Length: 339
Image (cartoon, rainbow, N blue to C red; front, side, top):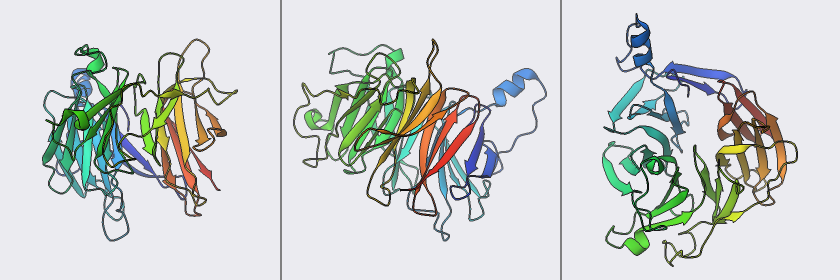
């Protein structure tokens, strides 16, 4: 997704561009060309978040793409069998919010948004009805309400192990966990927090009971911890004293402040991989890298021409994985990795 509202999609088999549309396209929403500079700037709808719905696109059902925008609009777009972006577009707006991240649960029945207003919203995918509202406005770690800047949530994920666990992170250097099977009145089991990353992008992910987080600030840039809620089916025991463990920086060739992290699906050999990317000034590199999730050793390194702001995985036709890195200059670098 791009600042000007353009979304570009790539085929994981051929690594070629297969899809391009503007967020104002489709469903009768296409607008005429703006005539003045002010109108052109107003017409731009920066795309801040993307997520494909899992368990679809099998040839019998359209691929569903979720799009988050800086104006608070969320789009659910059915791309069609031929990748036609104008086939079906459903939109709604979160008034007063800027959407910075979106995510689907593993079954594709629910999706989440988060952004400027420190609120995670969960929607039913079939009806687009709001079903849960999760607030991150109170920081129980410090016992005080965070500042307005710390309210921004930049990362949102569903647990792959426990469908009831939702996690989020942002500028407040706290990872939030919610168990949506519990009632908000049961605060001890409903909402937990762990001090951790300064997240400026999709900076958390979890798989096989391990949470991985990256931080754009300080020496602890790469951290892990056991994923809460995966051992006993709920958030369970108090998390007092539980901390993210710092992992030594794994590369001797690229050195950056990370903005994003993603954990792959299981590869053919049963292994997960971790992709991360970032940038920074003062001698830091703009780069991405691929790691083994089990050993945290580098498998692949990529030098970018801009800060790497997003990374993602896809399945290759040969049973391997495709890893892609997007940078601030609008470039996408994709590589196939075969086990």
